[in-house]
Length: 164
Image (cartoon, rainbow, N blue to C red; front, side):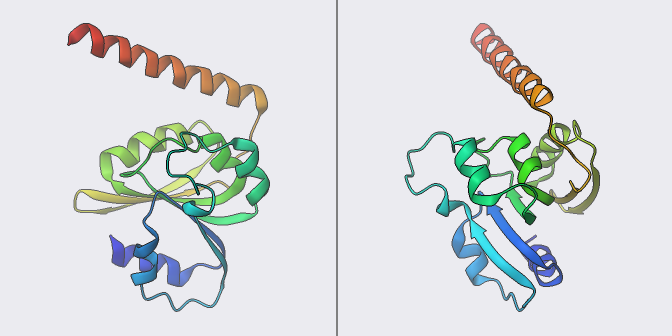
């Protein structure tokens, strides 16, 4: 999968943001692409390792609306610090990398918006390219989905308690 990510990074242009990847992973890669304007990692937002959530306003102000061309998202290390609505707000293309099942589960949340996606399977892992250029945020829609996700987590928690 690392070779495929390296191929993608060598073929894209614009601003790149990585979420939940180790910084050393990108340093080890042989990236010879001169068309990448800036490369931002998660550590620039999360200076304190004990932080539970990244503030939406801080995240959106730092990046800006649709200013980020490509976002690499590692679903294996996903801590749910960044909401899907924020990712749709800041990015034009998202690459979900990692376990195939987790990637497809995360893809379901992106399908709420008007998206196009391609799946590249590599053994038990997958890279899903999501085109968010036509996706739009709506305040009420985002609040509804946030409430829906919270109720789903609460339901799963209650069922886990009852079955244990």
